[in-house]
Length: 255
Image (cartoon, helix red, strand yellow):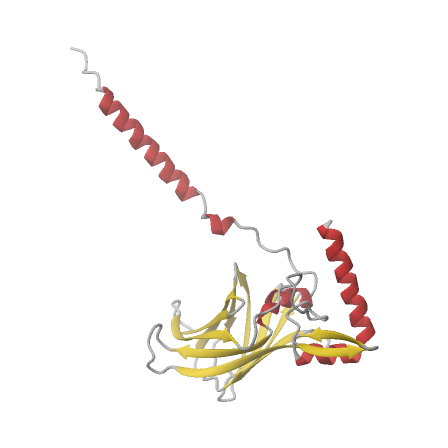
């Protein structure tokens, strides 16, 4: 006796089920759209690597929260980001006023290891040496275990031109799970950041938001921080020549 032939409705149901399983399998194999976005090209110099954080130059008002969404144990602090060209390798220097977790940090880039490095000092006078890389739009830095055998991690997330987050985490050296120490949410002090080419003043040294006027041969230019002001005053004509070369290259690329 022959087997009964499935009805059209059953055949359609099986076909749809097969298609659904196929789509699920393909979705599991393919990364999310955000994961496939291209990473920036490797930096050509330490300064070029640090310029990825150029929008953070300036002053910020921060609120620290040990627990997200809770005011218990919260505090207020300020942070100032500035360029430092006083040494052979350029750096970004961050100074925290009234900060409970860090007092200062000096951020550099190691071309050999292709890693960012931060030499930080806590309010208690301890030093921590962080290193790490960008993971998409977040800079993740990890420090070796301290004298109490606790490792530390910083995650710097620039959200937009007015908001930045720094997450502080820690864990015992023999554990794999990080726990939250606190997160500081920063709001930019003062005026809106200028966007190169967007009509705002531009720092002649680094291309960031120019807020401090400087002069040379009767012409006024702008820099973004005290470090860039010192660099300009040390070699104004050389800085101007580099700036004009950048403008020519920008114009050439724009067609």
